[in-house]
Image (cartoon, rainbow, N blue to C red):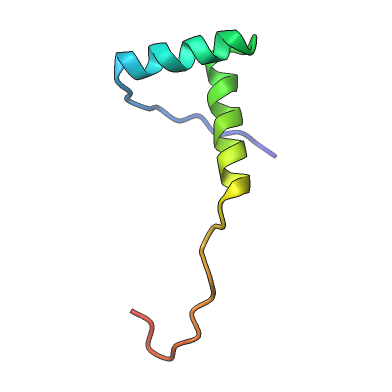
Length: 57
């Protein structure tokens, strides 16, 4: 699967905390964030239940 680049604006304090977590796992900041996204996306249902109503709003 191809990867796509994104630009994020995050508070320096948050980036510092994530960097420390990444270092504890011997990962790069980018890799740590990617793994966090992957793990979260696997634990959450995307789209929820199918809407069975006739006039969904």
